[in-house]
Image (tube, rainbow over all chains, first blue to last red):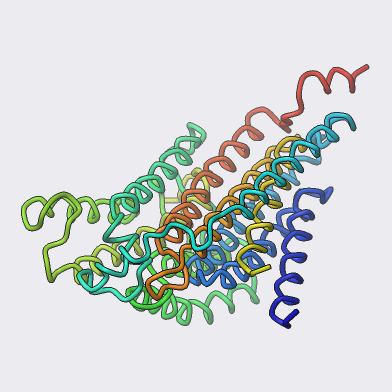
Length: 316
Length: 109
């Protein structure tokens, strides 16, 4: 058994132990903190599958941004739960039955994993054959923004729909207000220093990750998530605040990504072979153009979703 | 056993663990956590399919990987909407639980 295999088994044990912690921990807040650690460990498993793009996404969005969302929610729920929450588990017989069911599901899936054909069916040769036409070096970016660009466009629309859903949960009196804390709330020296030192570096790394995403692991999602994190840090430190949901600029930026995507896609009818097709020779510049607006939209959408519905009216 | 097969087993176990949390824990936020565990387990199963499809000089099939990246972002959107719903429900109705009627009757007796 090689050292790498021992490390793999150790990593597997660690991932499953932390995942079990998030299920069995008594305190919801502790479970959520476990979930963040779990996401980071899981991204190491993705690296072992040679899927660095997925690992970056899992670390940035699956663990990072989802973690901020859940920790904020768990903190608020804990305050509310002091008035008598109900966290009693169901009876032993039901738990035993659920455990048996879950073990059965796991065993069936493990059986499927063992019976997968090796090498399996693959679209990799197809992806490689047309890579030169897109001008890209990263096949995953080519799938996301060229071969299956329609899916990615719809996924951007899902993000906008989620924002509409979250905003629609606002209490009537706060409609037109803003979410999160106002500027200058909770002044905190350490956090303010971090929020001043980190963003210049983070913004650079975020933009770099989008730029190299054409040829190397990275892309609009991962870079956008880092930019989103930088904005969230400055909001947590009270240096910036969420704009009002009535803000035209905010709404424009939220829909810029999908709108530009649709516009370029529809223009393909006139200038290329069909909807969501790129004219020959212009694929790469167009893809980078779409990615620029997508990154902007992602960087703003993620913090808006984390902040939740508006909770205060802005002082004029 | 290769790293890919091991990752497949991790994915299978994560689906089981998440399903258990989803069924047994009455707290809504814990159900959302369980839901996310199932999701990441399913994504890992996609990952092993991608790895087994290594060809044409790529270490893994790029198509399932792109689907997982899209999936992670959609899962985040769903979680954000679910969390907003739970918090709003708390504000309007006080502490909430998704315990079944049957067990809560038993607890009262």
